[in-house]
Length: 638
Image (cartoon, rainbow, N blue to C red; front, side):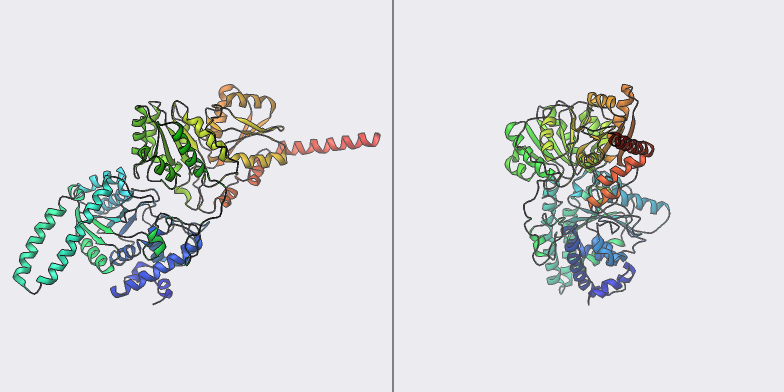
């Protein structure tokens, strides 16, 4: 058996033509191709290695795409993509014009529901199951959810609904004892207790083999087994919610998976299958360190991940260092993360201040209201959360935090475009959706040093503040080891020029400076979206003919909109060009390449300005020509 077999499996229908004995060999080939491909492109690695057998068994047993598979989060679907006609495209994953790193409905009919944020699968699959029932269809619907995603309240809202629905729905818990960060909370402890049932299952199989040759004893044992099963499993939380619970079973044993799934497919009503897998399965380095190999960049499979050479500090590292320093300075500081300790730069804080560090699991709504409760009692919460995940706690942001004007700092990592993770993770909406909330303040640092200073500024403020910063490193500004704040609500004029003022928000300052140097414009590092520096805006309007706003967020309702609203309120009649992301979802790919495609690099900004005011620039050019002619005449006369 070789790689050509995988190329032959253009669809699950062809997979189902194979004998069950051939499946382990197919799993080996899939895992090998995963390692080869992801090591060349980067991408989600540990999670995909851990679900090879489960994915293979699901497509082997279920009649996909007629039967629906809904993958929670979806970063574990690389095997699914290979088995559904995308084997040859795997090496394009997460690259511009290549495969998405997540399920995407317009990419394949087998991607039944678009996912990338956690805990949505059960709700979606339940909707599909009830729709099938209403339409008289016999299709089966399956949700595959991880133990990390199962910490979110939405999963339980869906199970509460599903348990009383009497619809045919299978929920598969892919229990690998990991999300991205190590597992936390009472649910993880509960799943560990259920795992002890594996000893019961092993003893049961051993007993069956011994007693098969003594039929009367075997019948008695079966009766006792059923009673024991009822005693053990009817008390699980899943049974209490109306599901028939099966498991735990070995998620890497294909024979057991196929047998169990085949039996469950014939069943009816809400069912719950507990599958135990190992993240990084089949690649020893990933098995040993699944966190490091969760989403690696390119690497040599024979060597594994190698230490990176010293490079510029990332914004995430700047935040992590500031958090530890401010915690030393103020014992009231507490740090909160919704299961993103590593991604948000909180590892050192969690070690240095364990009693003041709270990982609440994948539960953004709870994280925000939990922070509100802490703030009510006089503590100073800092919630480290990705921009795209703040969306998930929007009601809590308004109702529980802003309405009560509680002093909480929201450190919004991954603001702006995020590159390979694509539209599901793009942090381009936070300015628009937070700006309209009373009491909220919004800060946009333009570089790493300013990020540290403005975090301190936010921390000392009374009321909720978001400090938004992008993924990775910025301009490379030297970061001063200080906790001194910057003046509240004040912009800074970085360059004085003529005619047009570029009002830059966040890292867009640097392309603005490039443009201004070639076109002699004024550049303002705005720093603040809310409150805006109205005094500086009014001053600039008196000396300039036009404004250009630049932001790495959506234009609709964004920072540029705030400037236009402010000008209207102050009675300032000035032409304003807003540059940011248009009213469309961004694609996935290299971040710098995407910024260029969307016209948000220096060349793109200059072109947008010239295209927007062609007559102005034509007149400017004529003036320059006339000025040159006049100076030549003066020279000749002289």
